[in-house]
Image 1 (cartoon, rainbow, N blue to C red):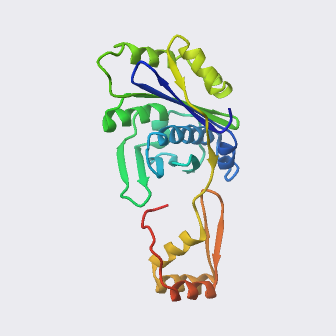
Image 2: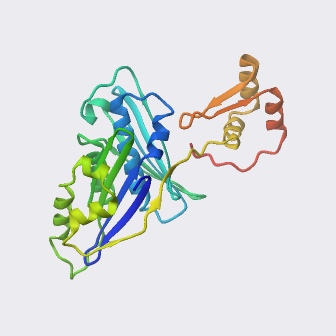
Image 3: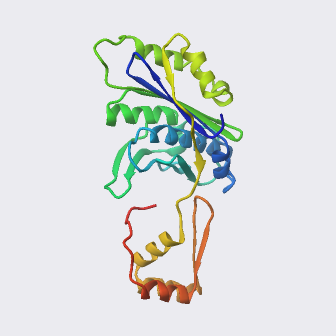
Length: 287
């Protein structure tokens, strides 16, 4: 049941569901920075949400969730690719105590970005409303996508988990109360059950009176998309004069990845080779 997504459908009603459990994937993020306990929980919830929502994209690419504001928590970011690889980070200032999401992020906003490989990206931005990340994301879907969506997210210890329900376009023969019933039953799940029970058991406990189709598990893992080639691409965009100026001042150019802690170092020889070689085609999308 660890590090996996599992999808399910209500056979006779236009409702889809997803359950995700993150173990090693979540720990890989926590091991790279000493996050305060509150941020550990929020990052786990956001990672679970990103994994759940990424299953809705039907192309090669990635989906990212970003909550940012002017409170003590400056940024929460999680990204999931169509291959179900995740990375995440948070930025904060000072001591962080337990508090509702609006108090932690201040005057915040939620940004959802979908980036299909080789195509123009789509970005939706809404005010950050609600006491929890789940409520903020539900508000985004209600206002921006006009899709009835419910999320239950939790994180504890070294595990994160989430449950998603989404209403699809209805058919005329459907049970009119099916969506309300599915949401009401979903709302009975406890954090302990969501973290501790396997997806099939969760579905059985919640919806044993419904006709449910359960799909195969999809593995999820941590992976960072940083690379030396991307670092070189960013330096090329800065231009030879600026890069040589940094090199003259610092002796070498060092770039650290905030997501995985990877370090990339370039010396004078590397820089000259960088600008002597023809520049490859690079994406100007921020990674």
